[in-house]
Length: 440
Ligand code: SF4
Image (cartoon, rainbow, N blue to C red; front, side):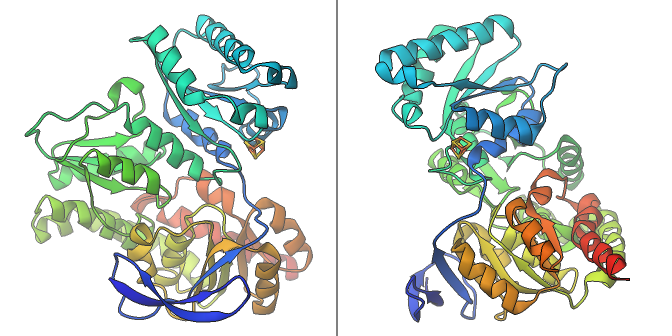
């Protein structure tokens, strides 16, 4: 359906333009696009939470020393534990011939598998260096899959900073993993597939709720073990748990699965609406749904009361980082009474974010992409009470007297569902309380 959105062109001229969109909001959105210098992590970062989720998987980054430093410093170097990620460093000598580089990669994989026979799923993760870009990791994964079948699956995706930002690494990983899912038998009973890496504790909470609702078959993607990848087909109903999984959603649609549109499960309202989308798809009677969610919803609302006292009426500015920003802005405005001045996001998938965008008022400027200098100027002019941004911007802004929250914490912490609503709200409230104490 065609709608009018306000767009800022790169030359700074605003123009009303019709933009195609498949979701319906009955008013113009204050939506802008920006291109310029970006301050975001690359998609390799996703390995930090993905390797914890998939317990028999291993992530082999094919990259440079920079890539090795990034994931080791971000994930912590585990000296005594056997980590489930590593970097095969492609030195310049590999440029002499791609056959050499392929042989080198095969040798590294052979060594790794000889030492770690417990690995059942190996991801070959591409990166930026030119010598890696020239390697065809897709074919390398196919070649090695044949060699090690059926005991080991080998899948490749790119976490390169040229192609991906931060959470897009998870999207690329899961999109590649869809190909490994078996085909659901024709006429298979309808099943629910919850998509997006969630901490085990959150997954268990959601599973219990779906069972209580009466949804008989629920699978999570990615699964904890590679042998548990759910079969996918036209009777699969997909509920995304993360808003940054656009490519994965498309691959699942390509297998015939149907996505259930919903806000994301943050806070009491977001979680209720997300569960309701599944309940409606299974035609679960409203009174039964209300009974099942009642206690969790009440717990979440109680947990939000304290942070709400701190945050009500406070102005918040989101720099683009994780693609969670529209969902978090919906949560802090609708459930904590904050005022979102600007919501930056690296990419905006209008179909996935539509139910969240509907809840944001016209005063909220939504910006897709980034020109960091322009954004910093707007942020300083707006003088928000709280700025959510990447690590690189946080310290300079704190030095200028602003209160900041590192957006990466919102990705690494369990924040989904009723029982994490209070923790999520506290992540926003704590910096404000700390700032107030320092002032006193
Ligand atoms: Fe490696 Fe590129 Fe990420 Fe740097 S941006 S760590 S070179 S993948």
